[in-house]
Amino acid sequence: MPQISIDYSEGVAFDRPAFVRDLHSRVAALISSPVDDCKTVFRKAEDFHVGHGGLPRAATVYLEIKLLSGRSRELRTELAEELLSLLERSVRPASGVRAHLAVNVLEMDRDFYRKSAL
Image (cartoon, rainbow, N blue to C red; front, side):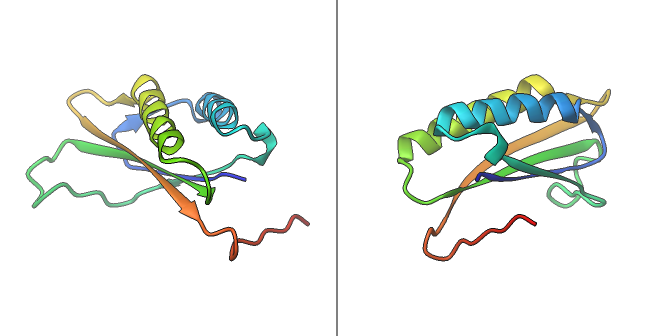
């Protein structure tokens, strides 16, 4: 059931299908969930700014993963570290571009999360 969103800007490249295979496999293994429960959406950011614009050659990839509540802090920390490492291995900044990578692991309240498949 992990809900994953990845925002990225101009200036970075990565093989999204290959990345998703690695991402879903790693997430499923770490949280003991079927791979088919993992869902990821990619969103290209039209605008990305660092500070007051002092880094004209900057790019970003921000990965946010939402899990149902109840997992330990240690597991969420391990997941964040593993996914940041996966980004570091997978993202290729364009020449002269500094890529800012980040991962955020969030919890969704089980009492209020609902889903459906049609």
